[in-house]
Image (tube, rainbow, N blue to C red; front, side):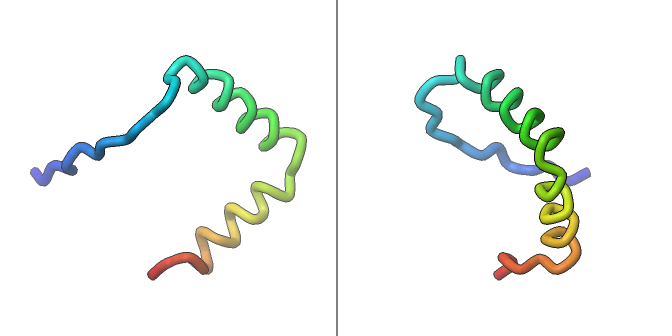
Length: 49
């Protein structure tokens, strides 16, 4: 079984993570175009490479 190496991130304030998740969830509910963009980018992968 292959393992994925841990990645190191520099995070200024971990206490803000919950607020960030809530904001992302709010945006997903209130801005349906974001889901459309997400699906399109998943399909087309315009940023790959």
